[in-house]
Length: 273
Image (cartoon, rainbow, N blue to C red; front, side, top):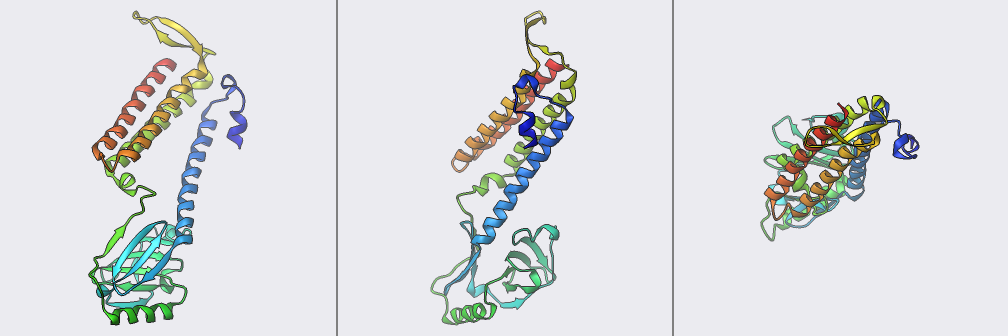
């Protein structure tokens, strides 16, 4: 709301400086945090456990983890485990991965602390879950195991198509996105540092001899990183659309975003130097 008040007037009157830049960074950080928390809350509200004669199915937001019943060795209450970033594992619900003291990978899918969860143990993995009625759930699981499986299953994770996890988990894509964002924020920071000292009119275009050919209001220099940011968003959207069919193409689009950020950044810094 404060930034909205500052930027409500015409661009010529925007008081761009390091304070406004810092508030913008805080806003971006809060938006990212809000999105992450919204995802966690949605996961908690949709978290569920299903059983049949073949497997245990853990579902949330369209994702599904499959645990074959024939691989389950036992079910315990609570477990001792190492959980990296344990402070953040309980935001909205208990999620993430760790390692039990006996070397199993621990997967958290619960709305209760680990000490109160049912822990389903397989030879290599452990799954912490929190059904509403622990005793009934264990009885149901044992009855279905005794009936025997009707078809073989393998441990699996079936991601939801809604969030396009493959794109976001691609290391190359992630590095390019972070690089493009870092360059854009750096350019904005340099502009915010120099902007208060700029003359009302700045040289925006030069002729072949290097002489100023056009003077423009100083606020127009801000449109260069804004345009680069918009192009990066467009490339990201296109990458999301084509990633399944053309992974290399999606990666190239994100690499192009970095190049665009660099070129627009060099242009902006050249103007204000």
